[in-house]
Length: 397
Length: 173
Image 1 (cartoon, rainbow over the protein chains, first blue to last red):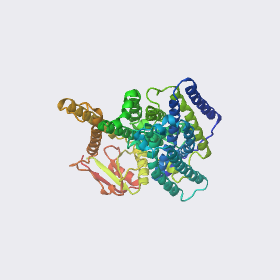
Image 2: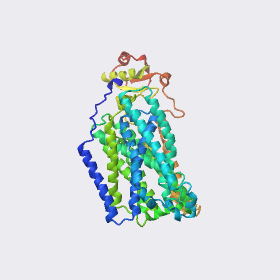
Image 3: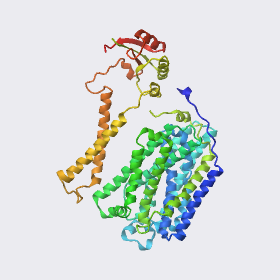
Image 4: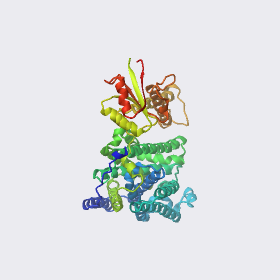
């Protein structure tokens, strides 16, 4: 059947004026929301800093999830995703830029993390200071970013170089490097989740928190990958992406949404069952004061993908799949909100207002700007990849 | 007396070509048996999609509802027990069992329906024409019943596509 394969020529990607203008408007909306939050809304400082922290984390999660997705597929030498690999590469290259967004929130760390107030710590937090102290915390952040950025930049360089001078050891190099990244990411994804999210409620602990955040991170990144794939396919930039690719991306979104629910429920049920006050206060706070959002979280992130993406056809309709992805992405933004706000801001001051809805526009614009710059720097598909033809012609059985 | 005609290929690409050629000649293909799933074959034969996912959905739903109802019935009216100071109706505790029974029902229903539908269950006698189809033979089966041609014409048509070991047998059905 090999003679029937048609590789369609892509329309070259151009980071054009209209796109730049749209991103600038989105960024302006975000900045106006931030200024409104600071000067007009009388929101406490903790709410503003916590919002910036939340959006910086979401920005990082999208890049990390894409890098992980790429690494897993490269390690397994899967072929189907080659047509969307350049999307994963460009998303992964946003990781170093999220460090800027993290550093910007450093002046507000005292408003987000209780353990930074070293002079009034109770006994429990005092005993945690060997791990939770600012110099070590910053050192860990530097290590995480150095490792993740190294892998993103190195893999990208190997991949782009293959466009010009194909090498025989290309697959082996990508595969070995991906393997090391996955080993390192297995550890750093957990520890970074403790550092940046679990330590907001510093008295509380959960042993599967790292996995829980990882699953949320991965689903968010998958949702963005789907939205970008559908959009670029619409403009014929990725003409070889068929409904088979969307079908497989939809399967990932479906499966990992259920995986997220599994971890969400496991964490909740064990704490509910053992009923120990040092663990339950985390959920008491959320169920009592954030009741609607707490249950909406499960609805958006479990029931919507479960019911909407169950059938084969629903995963093969580009617009439907992208629509579900947008809902799921908002759901995981809400999940992050519920992880951060009750601890950092408290239920009296936390709300969903102009700040929470407007500020993400700035971060979305920044993310897409970095993404499009890097996406435009290389060919939209790695044409010299040994599996490129196979990726353009495969079928789901 | 109705008879069937069958022959085999040793390469899946030859099989696909032969299937297309026979269809172009207006011959209806009764069945194709291969050692592994051949890409593109389902589309050429215009086979309807399997109904197995629907079986899984219905059985899973039934299992989930049954398990949840059973636990609620046991712990609220049949034999209420206080466990760990929790209320009788403690939904989080019922979810793992509900989930497991959902999976169990769906899995068993799929296996049983598949075995019955494919005539593979215990006690069934599969109508194997050529045992090599589990190894390296790609078999095409034509039936006189569903074609206007006579059995000799079918044998010639199948042989002309390059099929090996073309045979014609009476099934008596």
